[in-house]
Length: 144
Image 1 (cartoon, rainbow, N blue to C red):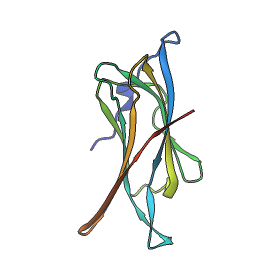
Image 2 (cartoon, rainbow, N blue to C red):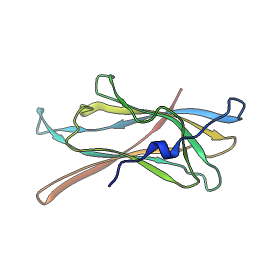
Image 3 (cartoon, rainbow, N blue to C red):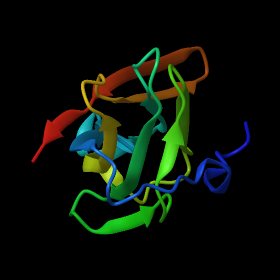
């Protein structure tokens, strides 16, 4: 799978646009504890940025990734990006990338047209070893 090319999604938002502004928090797990607090298991994380509107384009202003201690790891884009109606964009954190640790998270900032449904941000974490696999999801929460 190819990484998302954010530069192809760059959007220009006028200061005079009447867009609603929001911010969301998403918990993500690069690692989970296994057997004890001294052993961890690495996970692949797929972060979905979803436009839930069937008619309106929405804008994501930032997608910032933080580690367990709240330290900024990376910013995925530095200019607003758009998501067309019903479109999904993805951020993949490889299983070998354990920089986030057991308590990593994202902050998303976004803008939508008035009366448009809010974007949906989800995390799907998974891993397989031999014939065993595990997966689980997280859902973003709107914050102030």
